Image (cartoon, rainbow, N blue to C red; front, side, top):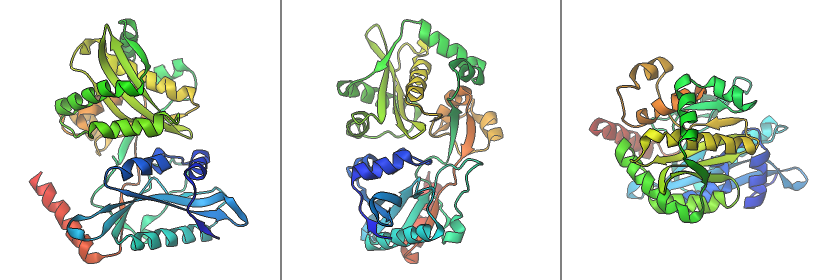
Length: 349
């Protein structure tokens, strides 16, 4: 089975049709991360005798480690195999992944397989030679909302407080609409204010602008804004691929918070996803704690993702955890230094 470097269009077509389609496996995600210290590599196998049809593949990212100690390889939410791919295809794909990682001087490969439903058969990282990773790159725990069915059914699954705030947001004269490229200036200003208010890190403004250029123009994302009497009150960027939408970035202003625009603009994001035919809406990130702990502590904590859990908990979704992060080690000495640095940083934090 020949290995190929697929064109972005061919790869994205394969991803879009895959049952486990994910925005982090799109070629545009590799382009975005390549502008900020990563290098992207997409590799795939074509079906036997069908050079244009992809049977399996993965988008890999590589980032230099400090002190010229090689790179870290990263495989987010993949690899992807066609439903009819056999075990030999999977083995060949992993062989190609490891070969590519070694060629890029990777000291280790960090793999985040993503979320698996009860109906799916999850991979077994230990059997594939991986070990549990001490660091995750994406939030391992999230809330998934079922957005299929009628609007009334969707609202009925939410808690009473969230329903009330959505209705309040829609009755206060707040206007909700898709933003243009020129509106990114206002969105970025809110992102900086939100990060300072909730004490979490945000990207530089040009990061979100590049994300807009890569995804919104292609129809794979939307910038949604809430406005009231000349004031921009809230904004979100929602991404979609296949049957899933992801709320990756959101911000709100410090003024007129009583108008509940953050609820209204999130409802607009859900409506956008439903119009695209999405069945799931991923709120993308809550604290990595069990539901009992989350419910016991969310009213008294605001650090990290705790600050957004109170908002996300009421939308009628299910708390789910991904398979987390797994590491495959190529250079034990460099990997030992990496894990030691993580422990030292945690102690300082």
